[in-house]
Length: 157
Image (cartoon, rainbow, N blue to C red; front, side):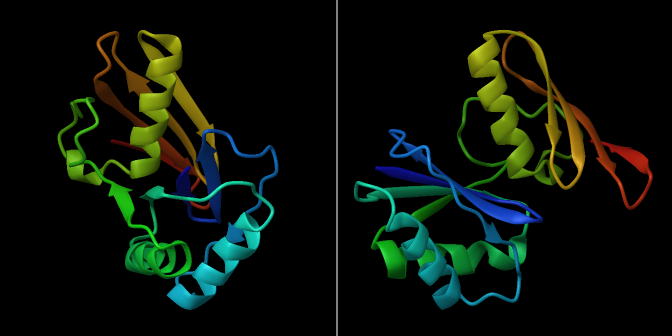
């Protein structure tokens, strides 16, 4: 079973492939968390799921947690966690001036939306910040904007 982790600004949210359960849980994002504490939270949530995790992938917008997530997955689940980054070979070209600044969350949203739409689309994510991202008919990431409530204004990427 594949475990996918969305490491966001507010929560760490798991998903599975194949879908192991409709049950979900979230772990509050805390950059000060230890890998041991994160591993305990993963094991606690997974105790309700049937199946064994053999692979893990994560997309993170909290760089301070990246190594801790990798260590927690290795220690608790005995498999390697692979990070999705702008350099990952995902079959999507990032047609923006600074591709390294596109968050994994936005890349993964764009990939999923294009896979579902099978064409050009606009992706809107109402998370801690609201993001808008554009994908071409061919599946290229064209850029977007982030609306951060605390700033009261948008930032284009």
